[in-house]
Amino acid sequence: MIALGRLQRPLLSVCAFSAMLVAASPEAQAIPLLNGFGGPTGYGTADHCVHPNDDGSYAGPGGSGAAVAIDLRPAFPTGLRFFGRTFNSFYLNTNGNITFNAALFTYTPQPFPVADQPMIAPWWGDVDTRGGGQPSNNSICFHIEPNRIVVTWHNVGYYSSHNNRLNDFQMVLSTSGTCTTGGDFDVEFRYNRCEWTTGDASGGSNGLGGTPAQVGFDAGNRMNFVALPMSRTAAILEVCRTSNVPGGAPGLYRFQIRGGVVGGGCTGAGMPCTVAGQMGACGMGVTICSGMGTTCQQVNRPRPRACNGFDNDCDGMIDEGNDLCPTNQVCDRGQCVERCQPELGCLTGRSCSDRGTCVETSCLNVTCPAGQRCADGRCLGVCDGVTCPWAQSCRAGRCVNPCADVVCDGRDVCDDDPRSTSFGQCVPGCQCRPCAAGQTCQPDGHCTVDACTGVTCPTGAHCEAGTCRDSCEVGPDTRLCPAGEVCRLGECVSGAPAPIDAGVAPPLDAGRITDTGRPATDTGRPADAGRDAGRLADGSTRDAGPLRWTQGSTGCTCRAGVAEHQPGWYFGALAFGTALAARRRRRARR
Image 1 (cartoon, rainbow, N blue to C red):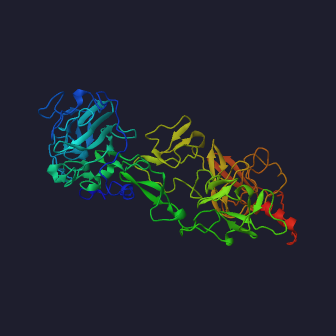
Image 2: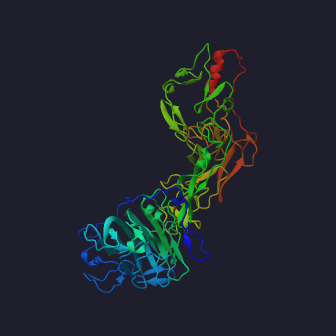
Image 3: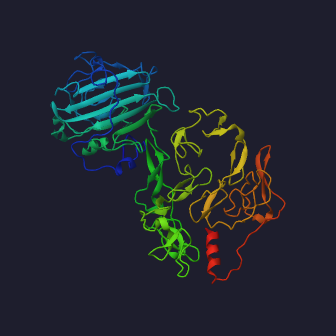
């Protein structure tokens, strides 16, 4: 865990490191550093570079004397607020850090907290730039522009003047792009090259051993600090191979300074992740904010076995068994298929496999990886071709609300608009990010279309353009919900679709729910008569009459209408031995 002062809670997720830490090797190269800031290497002009030294600090243009404070107000006019104090300048120290009270010459990193030295340290270790090779090696430069400061330690060696191992890293301070108060800022550490941890005078040999470098933040009050868990250990080299940003490039670390303290640096919440130690569907998780990092929270629990080529009951084995399919069908590689009939063979487009099952002819010789199935000769995932109800997405073969288990940080909210490219992810709330035209910012941080403001829809419905729509509504020829499930009141639940009428339903009022629980289309035909028979919101059956939606002064309401003629089409009582009828029955069920 993070080293923390007093009773502060952990601010950085161990999850971000535990799966990635491996035995350190002498060399690691990762994310590139930012450049284009002038000078021969692009990291800063000559007057913004530190002269070659050991344990020194920036001493002004071309200087080699006393340390000079660097004015940060060209980037942050109101200063930086850091652990209860506001600073207008900083000292750039050779040994991999910046300080705010005074220059720091200490070469062996002392464990945080350190008295009277507010500090940001991307790599507090015994840097020695006297080995020469400037500017391609042993250069330390800074760049200041509005809203950003970039400090680079480019291919620096270690004490005493060693160049056989070099480190290449950078610190970026920038104005936050999210809703903040005065003095708040973001911090980014970028590590491109990590080869040494320790100078000779810190007990090291050949750049390793002894007291390795420390990475983190210190308030200078002997109470508040944050240190990466690998600090002062050989594993500190792993900053080149790891990241605290979910999905971030190796070597990328981001933090936020809010209200003067380090915290809330959560990025990447709402992204799919794998839960350690869990199998099958239970291994599917979502990242949630946890201090400065994220953790992977499990969102699925074991469910009944299903024939979909996936491990639904989380026992580590793909679900199989003939009891998973309707009568006269068997589970074959993630699909319910018919057995081969000796006298009739298989339906058109299907062939008898060596397992005695009827499969698509194009899939006869196709073998798919575990968790996939074959269709049209191609291997598909359990979510391929699956359409979910409104405001849900398919994950691990299940339709889920991607925001249901997401915990966002600060004023961020989970984007619950399925039409958005950031659906299910944490984004700045509308208090910090203006809503689009025609939308209104709600107190919970979400934007609502003006026409839907104040509209309340019944369970299983949602508002679009001021009108309540069935959340189970899909277009024709669209597969709604995973195999073996139907949409009921906006949710995918276990069940089989009800038989549908082959004829045309009588015209229905626009916007009214049909006897299947779906709004009718403009043609009067049920939009998806194959979905599960609808139930009213109170749980009663369709016998209460078709469900109508009407627009009231306070939003959408629903009432039970007068029962109308409901055309029905049923399978006749067919003789079991009549093969042709059996074939038609199977076809009708498909």
